[in-house]
Image 1: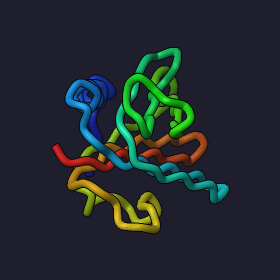
Image 2 (image 1 turned 45 degrees about the vertical axis):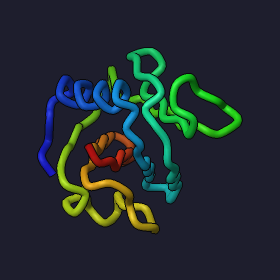
Image 3 (image 1 turned 60 degrees about the horizontal axis):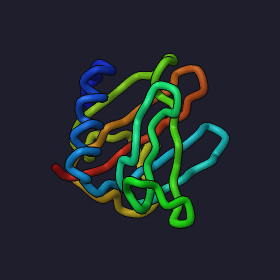
Image 4 (image 1 turned 120 degrees about the horizontal axis):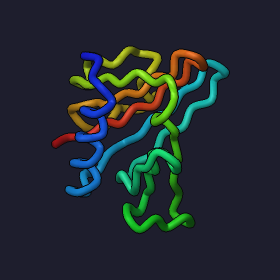
Length: 118
């Protein structure tokens, strides 16, 4: 995977949002917490972070959503083919999509990965 600038990640997220591209999200923390779900980019703002929902915009909280805060903090952004994603950042089931956008938080060791096909 190649490290990219936050502005490039925001551009890619904007495309995922505007084109309503289905994705799979995977979150993993060093403590062992893992979350995997299918959905759509619902919204992204500096204050509210990145919201991925099963329903897509507008969010239907009954169907599920996950909120991640990569903006305004020390976060590394990576983009590439899903085959380049490190094994510890892959869900236990087959990741859907050909590409991956990964957010890593060096201070906590958390990883948040979006898998999708454009």
